[in-house]
Length: 170
Image (cartoon, rainbow, N blue to C red; front, top):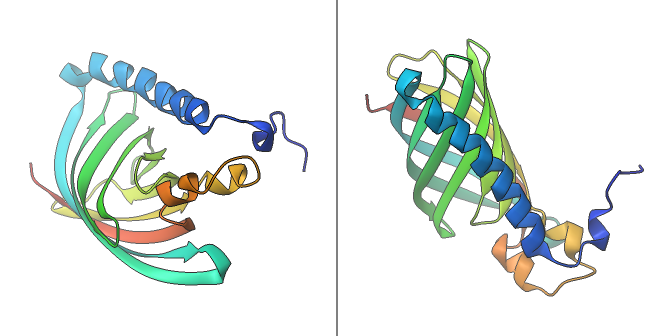
């Protein structure tokens, strides 16, 4: 498959991460403009999943996070989360997306373990809602050009699948 940009030629992962975070941050500024007219919801989220580790090994993991989600009148979604995880100890994520009525679809970055993610969550639960997320590590894109610390930033996972539940706090 031919891509417009060949990520394997990128020599500086920090530039890639900076550009991705800058994109998310610019959209979060839009969310801040709308916070007075947006729906803000705090939540506690519990996740259970499996990670695909190097060499075909699958490892289970779990996390509990506190987060906030903003949904503007234009159905733009901005959310962030911080929490504890096993086996990585700490985790968090920041994402942007769209509210499609019964579901929210978001995409974003998990700084540690370093993954990009795509998430689908119910948006109409009174007490909470279920979600599923699919995550991919950018580290394999750079394995021929960079040293092993980028695999460590992803906690040696190539990707993972999580299911979770969010309890609304307000």
